[in-house]
Amino acid sequence: MKKIITGILCIIISFCLFVLGLLKFLPVFIGSLLLFLSTFFTVLFFSERRRFKGFHL
Picture 1 (cartoon, one colour):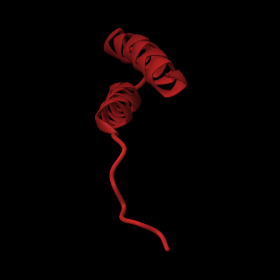
Picture 2 (cartoon, one colour):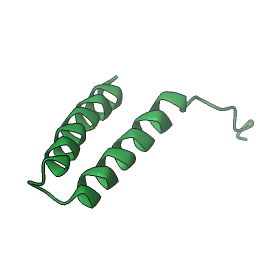
Picture 3 (tube, rainbow, N blue to C red):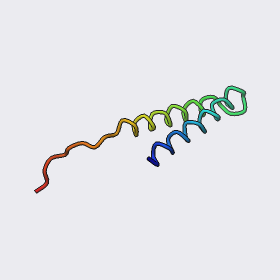
């Protein structure tokens, strides 16, 4: 649960940085890269599931 909340918080922060990039306060490249990475890892955490890895003897 903490991973999901952290991911959503990172998306909000990176979106604010992206908006600042659109307003010419920061480079747009940095904001868009952070927004993409935070969205990617949050979706990765949402789709993570427990998998059966076989029986261990």
